[in-house]
Amino acid sequence: MGMISEFKAFAMKGNVVDLAIGVIIGGAFSKIVSSLIDNVITPLLLKPALEAASLSQIEELTVLGGVKYGMFLSAVINFIIIAFVLFLIIKGINASKKKEVIAPPTPAGPTQEEILIQIRDLLKK
Image (cartoon, rainbow, N blue to C red):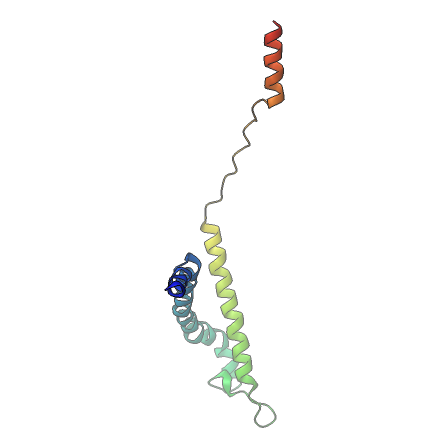
């Protein structure tokens, strides 16, 4: 029973649950980003270049009779676009957060020594 209760305590920690939720949401978000890249942004950016090369997809680019550098180029372009979109999203999230106002430090009260000096002076009177 000890091992099962330890595992339950470990699995139910806030960090583990938060990580699991983040992975699930990340998987769903990756489908949205992939669709945006594949169906909207990449065709808009690459359509003129592909038409000039008489190609329908970038993956068709080859060199030396069979090296498909077009697939690599497509992966690099997708990475750059995804990184840029995520940068914009994070920048927007950070801008929407309220900036914390730092309160001015409150003046410290008299120190213990000052209080003792005041007591001494009062006793002398």
